[in-house]
Length: 367
Image (cartoon, rainbow, N blue to C red):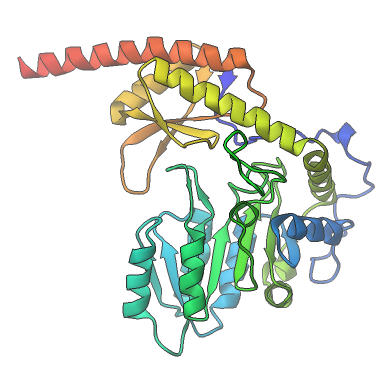
């Protein structure tokens, strides 16, 4: 079975033999009392990688966004959220809403819609907080954060980004032959943006292969979060082995990251060029999440089943705006050129079969 469902884009696996030995998993106290060994060093390294002043580790983005919006809900703010923001951040926004914060949604990647919402709904006594994903794998585009920041700064607000998809993949100085850029620091590095009015919440579980999250931003905001976080008091902090795995991921990224990103881009280009040869296309651009344009709904479901029977595992998903199933392929550096070729060959054969079946069924229904 060739697996195209894993989001470990850079292929980072952190086996026990690759990490230093540990004598205990946890200190037995919450992070509010004591940070696990290595946590501060990893947080500082991640903040620097992302172009921020300070960082703080959290067990997951669920813990992070729950606490972040709990903290922000105590301030005089109005929330404006991209309608296709990932669910974890949305759950944090819902907590703020329950606390009395007014929330407005705006069309995906539409700065004009955001400006209209802010112009109509923003109270002079409230600061706007704009929430979005740094990169959308569904449409294969980064958020227009330059424009978002202009609007946020015009009203003295804050931009909160879930940068999970970008961290480890995007970096500085993107070029035609290296669209991901260098370093893997995420969307801020890729776009050249920075500032004390930006907060990043990111999981390392995709690009870096570590079930861990980091909040990165200015010293003011991260310090405030540290002192007001609920889960740092009531939940266990990240475990010692997970923190060691994050340190290992950062070292691999430093030594081999740019080489891995070039290899990943090579495989994505091979997949997209191969799709074109069999008369297909996908959304996703140069990003490693590729979603077929041609197959939707029941056809996508049948294609998924046929591929699985022939040894190709892909992902069935739905967009925020549609209930129709879509079929996606997640490409990693662990895929060989032969894996991509076999996938394309199987896809070509299965698509022809699904389309013939659909034609027969349509003809029968019309007769």
